[in-house]
Length: 336
View 1 (cartoon, rainbow, N blue to C red):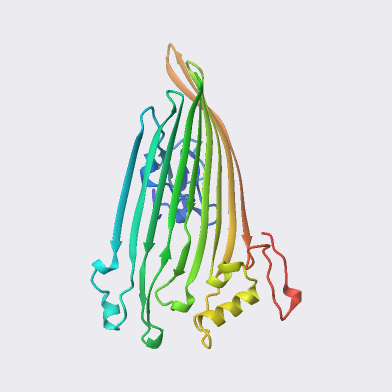
View 2 (cartoon, helix red, strand yellow):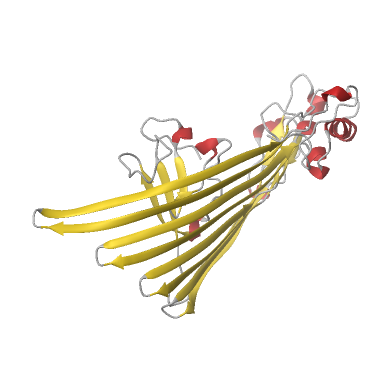
């Protein structure tokens, strides 16, 4: 996800899909695109590093634009399957030295695409599906607390789906609608090299991106593109007690201590955050070709409107409220 273009910080990039915004508006481009696109669904990758047009604003680094595939008059498809398993690998040096079990890690990736006609020469579809399950092995060792040494496996799932329809609505007008969805729950996450197993956390992440566009040929020298896009992220990350039921602060702490490390609180995970990011974008670009006796000229004019919200919900995914049982005066209700 880290791309450094023209010496700029990686947060100064902008990610687009089919020319429309696909950025993470909460933490920026440092985490890559908001909703990732499966590799087999990409027709073309464009990386604009300097002197790009005004329509690609909002950045001083680079613009990364993925152009997705479309269906055609013939059916075409692809499929793939890739697998790894820890039993095929040699044992980790530190795991072996500390007489720990080898983490039973594995990785599998499968998916495919299919595209073809709905109505010959008029309407076409394209569908992509990708499922990755990287269950990473983690082994941590603590020289002063060998009783806390552990070997475990992070449980991850990344599922990506894309649906696209292109319709030649009239001789001079083409309509395209594309929906992209990514779901990536992550369990038993060991964040950091000196983190105990009791301090593992979880993440639940749902991302989606919708784009609709109309291409219109107005005459032999004039072309117009109108586009609408909507991007959404719904993410929560905390310990398992928080994600299981949106516990308030007191209930989360009680569950965390009782369930994960009774009698020992040195590894308590206090991370708890839930947020929803919404981004709406409208843009229109009019292109004109003007020939004259002194040479040919291309003119482009357009406009862009973007509306973004980031709603942070703290410690209670239902209504964003805290709960301090020892001092009720500090119980606010928050909608950021």
